[in-house]
Structure formats: structure tokens, C-alpha cells
Length: 453
Image (cartoon, rainbow, N blue to C red; front, side, top):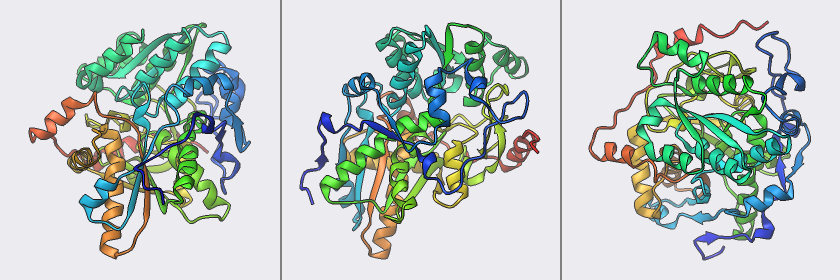
């Protein structure tokens, strides 16, 4: 076992291929449907908002997808990211478990999101696109895309969920530094936004609504495409660089995880750390567990249903077979804005449905309690989203203590919390509230699912 806390790779060891879980899934995901025809989506259906290279990645069944050298060069700005053994956290928990975390907050945008924003900007630039429209919840994806667009001289417009726009002004400032235009959603710039404002002028917004606004913006201009920060297959693909690097680093340490943990909203961060390890489970090389952690305020896996649903409020995106709370779901204004999405990656959903993935949900105060413990032990203030993975890791470590059995825990620290200090102020003042999902309201949201034969 290495004695160093940090397990490093050289730049030469950055993966040169992304891993595509579609090649190894025992049961394939159901096909996405065109919302206008209710027929399976074709590549041509996606060309109004995506470049062809990303569409090819979306539908590919190949196990390995080459990473262009131009993208690897940009990855070198911050990759490989460190894998760290959390010795101090282990001591504080008095656990026999070994805890590792992959620190994706080392990127210029402060989170894992740049792993996909760089490829998306690259492929759009190569296709002749001049402008990208997107949504952002907590601001991490918007930050990552604004950074990537600045590298490729693309305009960037970001529809930011209004509650996060209000709670996280410095995320907005970050995006503006890189030249992005940031619009609070719902806005009066799109039909989708105006329809919500007409009914609910004080709406805090949702990721589903912000997606509608961004897609509507992209469809309305020939020089503009849409960029998504999670959920879709090509985004999941790009994020597997996290788990692929972690496998190499753990091999250097002479270790392998018993459980891999990630915060889960749309699914990209969780899938990025977990899917490369699940590949070993599919091939019979390991019995590794994969644990997705979500907020009780938006419990997509733990309270949702597995059904076809729209990916956005305005019904513009393909209909996906996924775990969903209903596309009309409006989550409470929790601080983990990046986890406030009604649906889930179709890939993650299928694997959860098939029993390859486990899920837990926690309240806000539990999350911030775990975040403070981690910060005091490891010297990093985590994003509220990342604190969900920390809470999951602590839960597993305490189980190991109770059982008197060692286990190796790996989790993704998906981003730092430097732009989330207002949320920490609220918690430290004792004003953070737990806001579990209202199950009576949930039933009404789920009653609005599309009818698919």
C-alpha cells in the first residue's frame, strides 16, 4: 500500500478513450422517443440541436470511443485529477474502512462538468456552430461551459434556475468573466418561460424548465446548438474519464473498491465514477457495489417511477424511459441546485432498475453536517452536491465500524463549495430546513406522464 495520501498519475496516463457502458449492459435502455411522433428518435431528429459527432456518440454501441488529441490537450490543464486517501476522515469516524475520494474540484470550473463541456464545445466548433445555449442548476455546468466556450471562441448563453441565480451570485460572476450571458429562468425571453411566469410570477424555476428555455433558444437560431450537462448518453460517456483515472490510481495503490459512491441528480457525476467499475462487474471480475446518493427533496431514484417521460417542462426534448418524478415537478429551493432534476439518465435508470445500482436519499441538514466533518478532516469545503456523496461514504464507513469489517470506499468529490458559502452561512446560523418531497403532490406530478403504448 502506498504511504502517500495523494495517489498521482502523470499527464501521459490521462485516458485516451472514454468507456461506453452501452456495450456491456445486460439489458439495453429503451429507445428515446420523438415527442412529436412518439416514434424512436433517429439521428436526423437530433441534428437541429447537436453536431453529428455527438449524435454518433449518443447512439454508439462501441465499448471504447477515442478522445481526440485536441481534447486531451485541454484536459491537461487540470487532468489527471488527484485521488486522495481520506486518512483523517477515517480516524474521525473510527472506522476500519479505507476511504478514497477523486477530487474533481481541481478543474478550472471547480467541478467535474468540464470533462464534458470541453468535448461539447470542441465538436460544435468543428461543426461550424457559433453559439451554444444551455441551462444550469447550481451553476457548475454553466461555469464549465462558459470556460469551454471561451477556449473555442464560441458565444455562450446560460439559463440559470432562478433560485440558484439568487443564491449563488458568484457562480453567475464566474460565467460572466468567461463571456457568458446569464439569464434567470423562468425568463420572458422564451415561450416556455413566459408561460410559467404568467401562471406563477414568483416561480423559483427548475432544471426541466431551464432546459426548455435553452432548447427553444437553440432551435430558434441556425448558428446555435444546445449543450447539456448531464442525463444524455454522450455526457455520461465523457464523464467516464473520472472512473478510468481512478482505476489506474487505485491499481498503483494496490487497492480496489468494494463500493463506489456519487451524488446523483441527472447522473453524469455518479456514472462517471461508477460505470468503469461496473464494467468489471458485468464481466465477472468483481462484485463492486455502486451507490447513488440524492436529496430527499428531489428523490428521483428512491421515490420516482420507471417510465417514459419528457426531459423538460416544455416537452421539447426526446421522451426517455427513466426514473422520474414527473416533468411538471417543481422541487423545493434546496442548496444542492445541481440535484434538482425531475428525471435521471436513461442509462443509470436502466441499471438501477436491473439491480446493479443502489440509491439513498438524505435531508439537507444531514448533508451539511457531513460536509463540515469532511472539511475539518480533509481541508476541502465541498459543494452541497458533493456533500451527498460524502454522506453516503460516511454511512458506509460507519456500517463497516458496526460490523467490524474493513471495506474500501471510493467516492467522487464532484466539486468544491467556494461559491456556496451563503448556503454554509445559512446552515451555521441554524436556518437550514429539511424539505422532503411532498408525496401527495408527487402523485399529481406523476399523473401527467405521457401516454406511451
